[in-house]
Length: 146
Image (cartoon, rainbow, N blue to C red; front, side, top):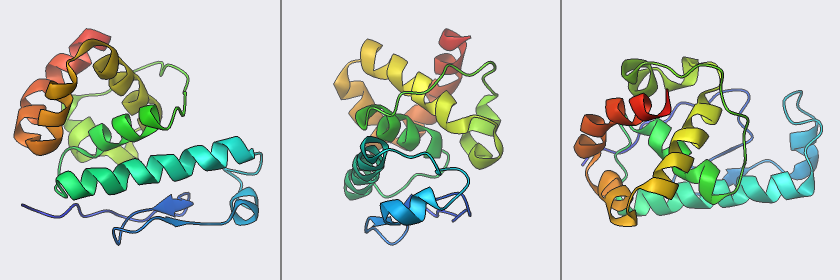
């Protein structure tokens, strides 16, 4: 089992890099360009989003090639609704260049929304337990959404 190696980016206001929820206070979030209009409701959704990541890490800390899936679950379970992206991306980019994809979180949200509405929860849990199964199915998930 390999721990999830996460990279910190300047636009991030919350993370679970050390397996704890780290989040800037709401005023600090609003001081950033990306989050200047953040409502308290949006702030609480970020807390739930990070809690989902903590739960994922407890089940399986290996997110290699699956960061998009972790974000798919976290954005959906936190009810962070996002606009449908104009374009999706390749399996390779989704799995290995996630943070370089424009609208990455929106792409994850919509794939996750599809998964939660159409796949048995047992299958989603299997993806958490066995990332190699998710790797095999990622291309098919992208095709369904095109």
